[in-house]
Image (cartoon, rainbow, N blue to C red; front, side):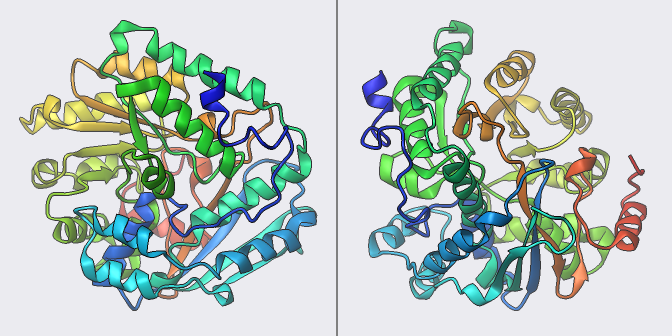
Length: 411
């Protein structure tokens, strides 16, 4: 077991490889490509702004600004290879004109600024601003760059053996319990991974040791490289942008779902449920959308409460919840996923996306970092999360108005 789990890091003798962090534009999450295709076809002229935030108090990232900038410059030299383009072309929901566009695509550093914060010592400011079509792919590699740059400078001799033991313990919780034979776990850990090599090693361990319990990965590069299923649909930025792109603000969530269904026509049918909170989602996710979409994804608030309420919502519309899929992906660890599986497995279809707890459980406190869209076409946009600390908006007046429009109380 140790030999199999050790493939990606065994030559490093416990010391970081100083090569560039991102060496492929496929080293990102699938939902970046699925959203980018919608942008190309539906919103090619949209202009957006993203901002970075580190939620951990007292983290000093300022010493690494020059190193992060160098990584960004390298990222912007990369192009999709022919093999990568052919892999994308083989995914049935990816259209040929989009792959042709990616064949010409290159990221541009002029859209990104990285600098020390003038307001808070030790913090850094990362701003991505420009055409949505040409900036959408920055988020995931930028977060992976910040993470790995921080840890390879602050934790120069990580204990990989201990990390492997923790991973094996998590795998054992599932593999050794016959009642969990139907449980499906996926890796969602690209953005906050300890390192690229460790991420790959985790995926190899999950694939080889979990067997049918391993559903796949959100990371497209590793899905291609290791013949596992790439997973993902939409993220909050898509529904947030619809606040500026739709016909009116109150209809922005339903507008986003309609456009998505028109683009994919039955594929990628998992709706993101928490852009405006649970109750606003249920008001919009009516009989039409409940039948149109295969299920929904949970990403904030109490997961047990969300699961119970979504099942009740389906039942109130006379839809059998056993025909729908509930995906849990908010700050999951394996024990929590197991508890959710045991609560809901007999009542609906389930899947679990586990991120940081798989790819950054190395004995150090993970960075809780995000890059969120804050403006689209010059207008503020925001997420009204069921977890209040996840709300991120630079315009308090707009946030208050958004709460009023969607009838979301101040937490």
